[in-house]
Image (tube, rainbow, N blue to C red):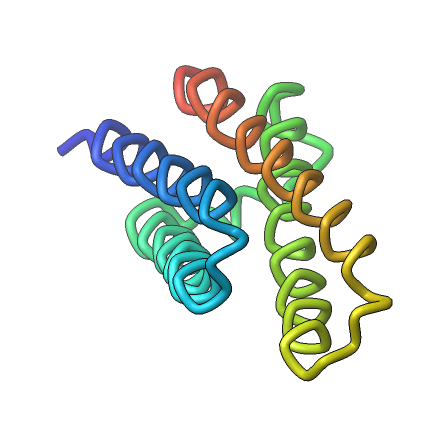
Length: 128
Protein backbone atom coordinates (compact mmCIF):
# COMPACT_ATOMS: atom_id res chain seq x y z
CA UNK A 1 0.00 0.00 0.00
CA UNK A 2 1.30 3.45 -0.93
CA UNK A 3 1.28 5.45 2.30
CA UNK A 4 2.67 8.66 0.78
CA UNK A 5 -0.76 10.29 0.21
CA UNK A 6 -1.79 9.57 3.82
CA UNK A 7 1.41 11.13 5.14
CA UNK A 8 1.13 14.15 2.85
CA UNK A 9 -2.50 14.77 3.82
CA UNK A 10 -1.47 14.69 7.47
CA UNK A 11 1.40 17.04 6.68
CA UNK A 12 -0.99 19.51 5.02
CA UNK A 13 -3.33 19.31 8.02
CA UNK A 14 -0.44 19.87 10.42
CA UNK A 15 0.72 22.90 8.45
CA UNK A 16 -2.84 24.25 8.30
CA UNK A 17 -3.19 23.85 12.05
CA UNK A 18 0.17 25.57 12.52
CA UNK A 19 -1.02 28.55 10.45
CA UNK A 20 -4.21 28.69 12.53
CA UNK A 21 -2.11 28.65 15.70
CA UNK A 22 -0.01 31.53 14.42
CA UNK A 23 -3.13 33.44 13.45
CA UNK A 24 -4.47 32.98 17.00
CA UNK A 25 -1.15 33.83 18.67
CA UNK A 26 -2.67 36.67 20.68
CA UNK A 27 -5.09 34.24 22.36
CA UNK A 28 -2.39 32.67 24.48
CA UNK A 29 -4.21 29.59 25.83
CA UNK A 30 -5.61 28.68 22.40
CA UNK A 31 -2.25 29.32 20.73
CA UNK A 32 -0.40 27.09 23.21
CA UNK A 33 -2.92 24.25 22.80
CA UNK A 34 -2.90 24.40 19.01
CA UNK A 35 0.87 24.63 18.70
CA UNK A 36 1.36 21.81 21.22
CA UNK A 37 -0.98 19.66 19.13
CA UNK A 38 0.97 20.60 15.98
CA UNK A 39 4.29 19.57 17.49
CA UNK A 40 2.95 16.32 18.93
CA UNK A 41 1.16 15.39 15.68
CA UNK A 42 4.24 16.17 13.59
CA UNK A 43 6.44 14.01 15.83
CA UNK A 44 3.84 11.22 15.57
CA UNK A 45 3.90 11.60 11.79
CA UNK A 46 7.67 11.14 11.83
CA UNK A 47 7.20 7.98 13.90
CA UNK A 48 4.58 6.70 11.43
CA UNK A 49 6.97 7.30 8.54
CA UNK A 50 9.76 5.55 10.41
CA UNK A 51 7.61 2.52 11.20
CA UNK A 52 6.39 2.11 7.61
CA UNK A 53 9.48 3.11 5.64
CA UNK A 54 12.48 2.74 7.95
CA UNK A 55 13.16 6.41 7.29
CA UNK A 56 16.00 6.72 9.80
CA UNK A 57 17.96 3.89 8.16
CA UNK A 58 17.59 5.66 4.81
CA UNK A 59 18.43 9.06 6.27
CA UNK A 60 21.75 7.92 7.71
CA UNK A 61 22.91 6.86 4.25
CA UNK A 62 23.72 10.50 3.51
CA UNK A 63 26.27 9.82 0.79
CA UNK A 64 23.99 7.60 -1.31
CA UNK A 65 20.73 9.54 -0.89
CA UNK A 66 19.38 11.55 -3.82
CA UNK A 67 19.94 15.30 -3.63
CA UNK A 68 16.26 16.14 -3.07
CA UNK A 69 16.00 13.67 -0.19
CA UNK A 70 18.98 15.39 1.44
CA UNK A 71 17.26 18.77 1.08
CA UNK A 72 14.02 17.31 2.48
CA UNK A 73 15.86 15.77 5.44
CA UNK A 74 17.57 19.10 6.16
CA UNK A 75 14.21 20.86 6.48
CA UNK A 76 12.52 17.96 8.31
CA UNK A 77 15.27 17.59 10.91
CA UNK A 78 15.56 21.37 11.13
CA UNK A 79 11.83 21.57 11.90
CA UNK A 80 12.22 19.18 14.83
CA UNK A 81 15.20 21.13 16.18
CA UNK A 82 13.19 24.33 15.83
CA UNK A 83 10.24 22.70 17.64
CA UNK A 84 12.55 22.05 20.60
CA UNK A 85 13.70 25.68 20.58
CA UNK A 86 10.08 26.85 20.30
CA UNK A 87 9.12 24.76 23.33
CA UNK A 88 12.02 26.16 25.35
CA UNK A 89 11.36 29.80 24.43
CA UNK A 90 7.58 29.34 24.68
CA UNK A 91 7.84 27.97 28.21
CA UNK A 92 10.07 30.90 29.20
CA UNK A 93 7.55 33.30 27.69
CA UNK A 94 4.70 31.62 29.59
CA UNK A 95 6.67 31.92 32.83
CA UNK A 96 6.88 35.69 32.35
CA UNK A 97 10.23 36.22 30.60
CA UNK A 98 9.06 38.89 28.15
CA UNK A 99 12.62 39.52 26.87
CA UNK A 100 12.46 36.15 25.05
CA UNK A 101 9.47 37.23 22.90
CA UNK A 102 11.51 38.56 19.91
CA UNK A 103 13.55 35.35 19.81
CA UNK A 104 10.39 33.21 20.07
CA UNK A 105 8.79 35.21 17.26
CA UNK A 106 11.82 34.86 14.98
CA UNK A 107 12.09 31.15 15.72
CA UNK A 108 8.36 30.79 15.09
CA UNK A 109 8.47 32.30 11.61
CA UNK A 110 11.59 30.27 10.83
CA UNK A 111 9.81 27.12 11.99
CA UNK A 112 6.85 27.91 9.72
CA UNK A 113 9.15 28.37 6.72
CA UNK A 114 10.98 25.12 7.49
CA UNK A 115 7.68 23.26 7.88
CA UNK A 116 6.40 24.62 4.54
CA UNK A 117 9.64 23.59 2.85
CA UNK A 118 9.43 20.16 4.49
CA UNK A 119 6.00 19.68 2.93
CA UNK A 120 7.07 20.99 -0.49
CA UNK A 121 10.23 18.89 -0.65
CA UNK A 122 8.36 15.79 0.54
CA UNK A 123 6.62 15.58 -2.85
CA UNK A 124 9.96 15.37 -4.67
CA UNK A 125 11.63 13.18 -2.05
CA UNK A 126 8.79 10.62 -2.25
CA UNK A 127 8.73 10.56 -6.04
CA UNK A 128 12.38 9.48 -6.22
